[in-house]
Image 1 (cartoon, helix red, strand yellow):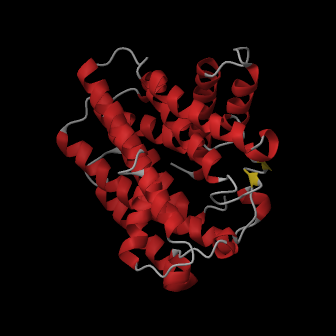
Image 2 (cartoon, one colour):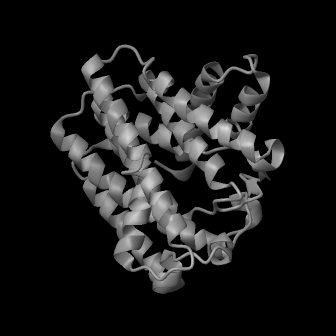
Image 3 (cartoon, rainbow, N blue to C red):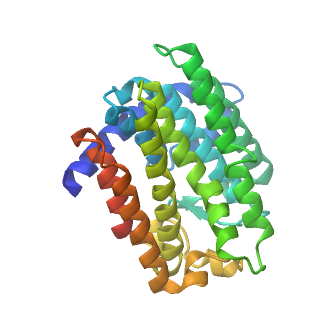
Length: 295
C-alpha cells in the first residue's frame, strides 16, 4: 500500500465517520448552544485516527470494520472531549487546536467544560446503540473503552502529566504517563475492532502489542513535533511543552535519541503484525507514517 492509497483509505473512512457523527450529535437539537459547541470541536478537522484504527483492526481479523461505526464514533467523541478539556487554561492553556480557536476561546471556559462533558456522555450512549453484535461482546468492549478513558487510563495519564509540570521525572514515569494518556485509547480502539469482528485470542493479543508500540511511537513523534514542527501544519503553536515546563522524550533523551526511540517502536509494531496478511496493510502503513508525519 502506497502513501497515496493510505490517504485515499483514510479519506474514505473519514467521510463515513463524519456522516455518522453528524447524526449522533445533531445540529438542530435543544439547547442549541451546547450542541453547537460540541459540533464545533468535533468537526474541527480531526484525523479520526482512533475510529479508523478500530475499523482497520476489524478488517485485519477478517471482519467488516465499517459495520462498527457507533463504537468507532464513540471513541472519537471521547478523544475530542479530552482535547477540549486539555486546552483549558487550567490545563495546557492553548488558544488554537487544528488551526482553529479552541473551544474555551470561542465559548468560554464554562461552556467548554460542559462541551467535554456532553461529548463524553454522548460517547457511551452512541457506542451502546451498536447493533448486529453479541450483547456480551459489546458490553465487554464498552467496559474496556471506559477503563481506557478513565483514571486507570487517559485521565490518569493526564493527571500525572499535570502533576509533573516543573518536576523531574524518570523514564518509567514518562512512559506510564504516555501509555495511559495517549496509548490507552489506541489500545482500546484496536482491541475493540478485533473483538467486535470476532478475532481470536492470538489476533487480539497481537493487535494489543501493536497498539502499545504505536502509542509509544505516536507520543514520541508528538514530542518531536512540538520542538521542530510547523505551527501551520500541526494547527497549534509549537513549544507548549517547554512553555509548560514539561518533561518529554526530547528533553529526557535529546532530539536524536527521541527519533531513535520512535524508530524502534515502529519496528516493534510492525513485528507484532507478522502473523497477519494483506488485511493488516493499513495498520502497517499507519505506523510507518508516524516517522514522517508533520502534523
